[in-house]
Length: 223
Ligand code: DX5
Ligand code: ZN
Image (cartoon, rainbow, N blue to C red):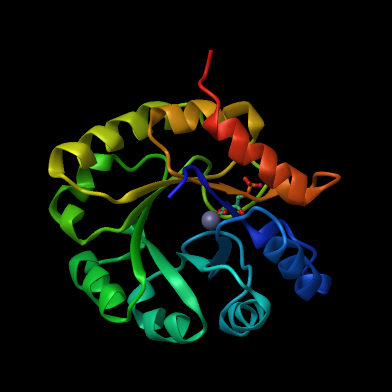
């Protein structure tokens, strides 16, 4: 697989024209479609839920990368798997029984992911490393698109990369929040393999071109 994978976040799309936006992503160099589910409790914002995920899945020709920003996500794993999720990522901070939750995700046939808020240290993953297909590092505080990238994420990415390597884990490292051409190269150099991008894709004049540029920015060695 050629890294980085690019996962545009539909949170920044035009919700009134979701089918058109998904078709644009189908025809673009995007690898996954990132779907941000927010409950207004774990995060201050409410985005959308199952029916919208299903609707996206109906038109998508790329895997749905579902990021659950909800409390006790274990209550909805099966429903989101049925709604078309290829990856299911839960927040460590919202999952009281993370070990069981990750087993359930794999049993459902989905890629199992854990997301960490900016303040959450990577070593907290130590006891579940063997259960992980993906780790999502939040590079903004979750809840909203269009926020400024937190620079500390580079160090955290390097630390996570080392931790996965020494455990022999092939888990992907996904960075979410404030990702653009400005930081894509350095993120990949630090060890990121998946880049989520909302505003930098959907606010661009040509979102499809912006996705292509992010992919190549991530492949250029950083000077
Ligand atoms: C934030 C979401 C992100 C968001 C990223 O809570 O998890 O996926 O859509 O948007 P940008 O790229 O605009 O920061
Ligand atoms: Zn997200």
